[in-house]
Length: 294
Image (cartoon, rainbow, N blue to C red; front, top):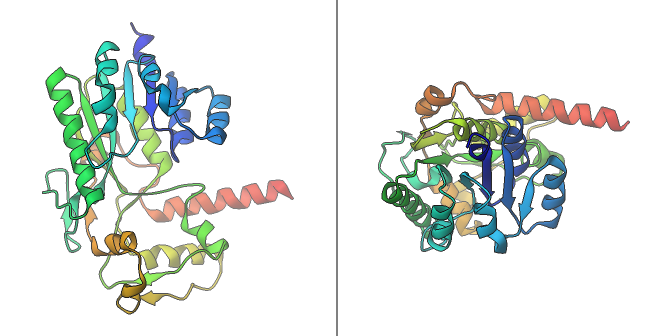
């Protein structure tokens, strides 16, 4: 039974999958997961992950006692719970971790939100996130399975970060007065999820977010500073509003400060409490990698 409890499946091996699988394996888990990415499959198999296609999700679930659902919801909620509930029950799953988003809070005009704050979804994507959360919660209650929902802020890491954007000249800084948002480094996501998977009865909702909300320009300016380059020229949000896509507008219309007190209480201090520590680490890793290639 002890060995069985160390079998975990990640349903949706996405951008954070390498870090997450790496942390889980170091904690003694036998990890499996689903993806249709051939490149990601090869990388994760070298790490020791048993990889299934999305069409083999039932087989993947039957291989585990705990699951982490990273796949996004559709407009009708969580498709994995809806389509694979029988396999989850047959496997006697003991814990479900579900990755949601802090976007479910909607706009709070820069005020602080915590896990008890009202959800204010406006668009279909935010509403789908809320529906997905409720599907998981209801499923856990109905079948007495501990469920832990992680509302994640903007993810950054080795391959997705502002330093890489600046270096590739793929960045258009925007200024909007008093607008802030939180971030979270992929290593912090991986550490927290691996800790949660080790717990026996963790359940509830956790904001998986850093401790220091900041504006986009603050982050870009700090990146430029450590890179020792001039600060990229920015545009005013009001001036370019009509030229922005709907997803970009959605991002800028939502303004909130995410309280991560419960996260710190349950799982301890973050590896990267703010964007500064995270960007320092990313830039130093880049310098080290570059020097090793020379």
